[in-house]
Image 1 (cartoon, rainbow, N blue to C red):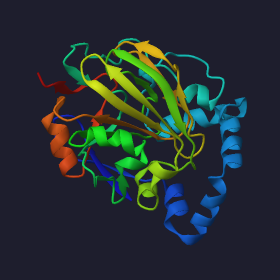
Image 2: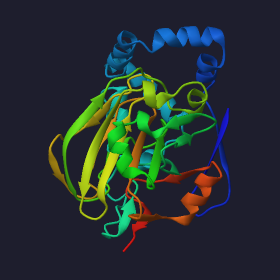
Image 3: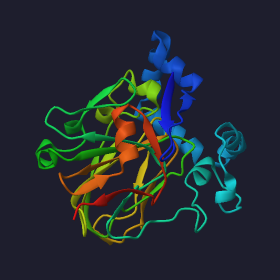
Length: 288
């Protein structure tokens, strides 16, 4: 299966094929039988243990080549496991955070789609549909009717650390257990991953944009979400956490008439095209 994305302010489409193994697991009866075994928590734990072991180091070089990862953006170090590599930190200066208080930034490197929030919202992501009230408590969603839902899809080639989009504070992080699935589009066609994937959400009380909900969603394989803080006063651009191995997703829920999002992203989203964004990049601005 192919899916479509664009770089910022660019009309040239970029196409990417889904992984062949995922096509098999999600695309036929035998594959789905095997998948049912793989998504069990005991198997997930074994996979996670392997990717955190020294044995997994041999996976690093083939992974870099297969996904065309630019390693000049990262420190030259000796990794102790595949997960050590996957959660690597980027070199200082390779991701610039727009510190203008009115600039709304992307929390991560990803492919972004934006949706209008209404009571019947189903977010379409490559021919699959997801209702917004499967992400967080239904009572919370009511506050965001008329606002925007931002879906940041990270694939395995992306930098997997993410930051706070403004300064402010948050209290507890709500954790919701689930079954792990990949978030690549081949999976989205068959399964509602928001209902089944392990996820965490945080209510962010921000200085400039009011109350924002951030949801981090794990994925097939390890699928682990690692947030650094429970109760915390944060600064814009400060690292909030990271994902261990597996493509993952962040969703932001923003209230009505708070932010004017950039036109290229809105237009792409209307056409079902994802926009490639980077950690700290401006994607909208505060409505004054």
